[in-house]
Structure formats: C-alpha cells, structure tokens
Image (cartoon, rainbow, N blue to C red):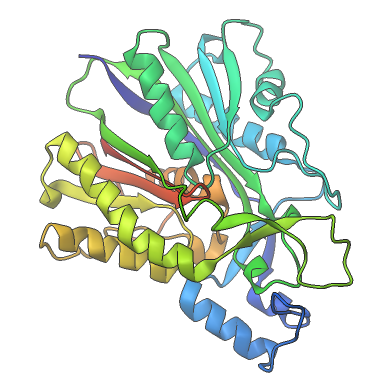
Length: 354
C-alpha cells in the first residue's frame, strides 16, 4: 500500500513584531460604530486573557503573500533534499491573494502557486500549480489533496504551502484586528512504501447551513470609512461554540479510522486561533475517549505569532520539528494529529505517524 510522508518542512516568520501595547492608542469601535466604555489597556488585557496573544508578526511592506510563501517553500525543498524540478504539484493555501501594503484589492492572477513556481525557477510544465481557498484549514486540506494525488498514482512529490498576510485585510477599528498576523509554512509530501510512517487517516467537513458566514468580509466599524472597502470579520462567540463541538468530533473520526489508540497520540498540532478555544477543543477531544489530557500534548505559538490563518499549523510543525519550541519535540514513531477549523465553516484533521 502506498502511503504519503512529509519529508521536509520550512517556515517564514516575519520580522516585524507588533506587541499588544502597540494598540493602546487605537480607536476601537463596536459594530454599530459606537465607542467602548472601557479603556484600551483593559480591552487589551481581556483580549490577552482569552486568546493568549501577547504579540504578532507582520510582513515587511515590500513582501506579499506569494513572496513569503516562496521563502517557506525554498526551506522545505532544501529540508527534503529534493530537486524542485521533481515536483508534480504545488498546492498553495491562502484566502486573500497578494495584497500590497495600503491596497484595497487582492491580486490572484496569476495564481499564487504559479508565482511561487516562477520564483523557484521550475521549468517542468508537468509540475501543476494551483491555489486552494479553504479558510484556515487550507494547508491541512492541501496535504490531504497531495496524499490523494499520490495514492491515485498521479504524483510522487508535492509541495504544500500555507501563507497569509492578514495584517493587510483587518479593520483597525475592530478589536479582532489584534488576533491576526502574517506568516508562511510549507512541506514536501512524498510517496513512501514505508508502512510504519506517513499519513494514517484523515477527515474533512464543511458546515454551510447556518455556519457559512461566521467568517466573512464586511465594512469598517468606523462609519466614516469607505463603505465599499471590505475587511475580515467574524462572529467570535458563534465560532467558539461551533469549534469546541465539531472539531473534537472530526478529530475522533480521523483517529478512529486510523485504528490508533488515543494513548499513542503524542502531539496535537492545532490551528493557532485562540488559546482558550484550542484548550477546550483538546479537552473535549480527550473526553470523547474518557481519557485525561497528557501534559504538553498541544504545542502553542499563538502567544508570540498570533493567528496567521493557513500558516499556523505548518509553521508550528516546522518550529517543533526544528527544535525551536521550548519543551516540545517529535521523535520517530510518534503519532500526531494535525487539525484546523475556519471559514466555510471547514474542519479537517490528519493522523500522522513520524
């Protein structure tokens, strides 16, 4: 049986650091345009207590999403020790395209995957490059698609990238703007006949009855701003309640399909969206198996890196694998779960053995 294995990872952490105190002079507004009775230092402290975010990273003005995607891709290719010309697919997950600093329009023509292929200098026309728009779970879904191509016998090596510059699409008058950040992560997925490691199983779902617009584009909370310019908006409470209910169930479905015991799961690489939410998801996941949550099972980078959407899971994975997250490591034979939730509302999970 042919399995798919991650043979290399890479990430790009932007150099501009924006700390919570940098928002002290920001004029936050409610959705109806009214002001808050609380001072900004109180708002920011409450925000940190809920999300766990103390700082986030922004890309330099001269870098667009496809640029930082390229930086992460280069590192993943080098880590896997392959020739880029050998790639059969380049799958790039994002949500807003290339947004220039100060621009009001995203650029997705040509696709960002094509731009990365161009930057890599790949001449092979049989290397197919395309983008995937799947909300925050986009990179995880890209890995699932790469596995499908490999399992079908039409690919042997795939490059999967998750990249985003959310700092370019936030409404500065919205408190939620403090959540978002920029970043990029990538991996190489290759065919392997090693039955002891690789992707063991996966699960994906889209909920679009009542949930489709929990994350959406909307106008600024400041009524004086151009109403035709749109920014990322979300219904935070609804997303929280949705995620803590449905993500644990999807993770359980994936683990059940793998036949692996919950006690053998060493790490859960979950989308870095909100610390309290992620903790609740993992706690409920283990409750489904009537099992306690192991100490250190959930690595976190949201405190320093914020929520970079599709980039959070591959970035976290790369940092842990490279030994750059304190007290966290993955050893050969370890079983991990990669999981995410986001706009769609989409949910997915992968059970993987290293």
